[in-house]
Length: 93
Image (cartoon, rainbow, N blue to C red; front, top):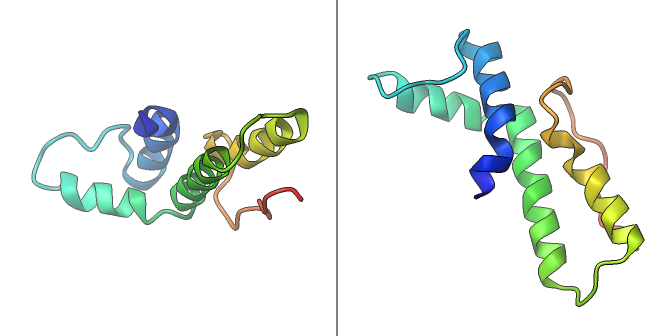
């Protein structure tokens, strides 16, 4: 289910790295997948998902500030964002 959230980012990063949107299942596929998983944009997306899941497991009720924090944190999933250092996505106080 998490990979579904990453699918568009996966395709965009793979296109940027390799010129194709899917590594396929050929001999180079494991290497291509490793390159994609090491990409800063993908690392930031996985971190944002992990942070949101952790925070959601620790709360009983989702309020407006939590929704806004999650929306900001998960904006890294937008494949149109350029790669680079992720913004501060520290949990709201």
